[in-house]
Image 1 (cartoon, rainbow, N blue to C red):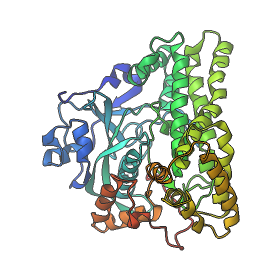
Image 2: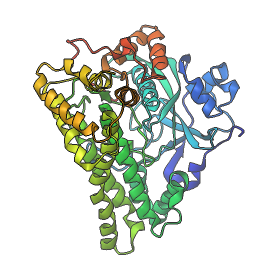
Image 3: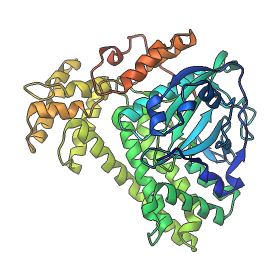
Image 4: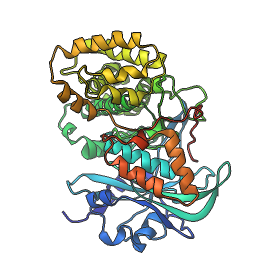
Length: 484
């Protein structure tokens, strides 16, 4: 298949976007480039890690097949409605078809101000750009549905946040950038016809199997709910805290997007919340599933006009999906954690085994990632290596015996079980302290740690003593920032 670039999203009409040229930068230079992703996208060879590519990825040059576009959307931010948000520092350049024919957006992040910038500078700082590149690529490697990073470049210009910091631009790739907030925008600022056009576009692009459904828009709501349930369950199984689950940051494709104040849990704490602006813990680890349901309710409100001509009937139909979401999530969660524990043919009755384990990890502040990795080690008695992590091992021993009893229901050779678990439980995560070290090195001109992490992330289930190392004792009360 030949390289194909177009922008079908613009067929929705100008309500949904603004045409904006990127603002050139003075001295662009390479940070990182994703050659494997470029090949998958069939990105032109002459525009990869070349002077021409540097021009494209910095916003200094546009190809004839690029149509820089700032997307319009609404958002509930920490529960408060902001009717008109949109891309304040991002520009969708084009859509391309991958080697297998899947359509992807290619977007610049940090490309300068747009009509949606709300007095912002439209720029991105080096630290957040690196964070998104590194974390999104690790997430992709472990199988999480996520946006990805094609390139990261510096701009040669300083920007101002709390202090003066180097500017950078990220080239982000996603199945699309259509958000729950996009539907909210169409509902608030457009007409029923606009909502329908958007829904039809999403069905055609992401859920084509729904086109023949008797009630395709209700089926769309259910499909998005299922995608969100699976995504959040995957986050939870990795100890990932997104940090800013506003409706403008949640995609209808079910991808992780907008790696702003995100972080990973070290010692397990279900109340973990890292974002400096989330003072009430709205988006804490344990709150991610109910927040997903809350966001879906906002999507349902936007779709009511398509669900039934009678508003009460439309509400009743939407509620069937929203009421089913907790069960959707628990089913997805059971599948994710059952894989981490090697439970064959998981049953709903396995949920207490999972919940009790998490309670023990929280009570004794056991490192989440390390526990599951040690549980996976080959031993005469499965899971025995994890026992050493517990200062008070009686609680673990009681749980461990229950787990062994459950495994006995579907006997498996201990060595084979270990291999299965080692492929289900990552050897390392993007440790918060390591990411901070990488960013600090990059600020000092040393990109070697960033490149080393990118390389290691290609094999996240292979033991790596350096990247798996626990944080130092004085690394506590970690706080993240959104980068704007």
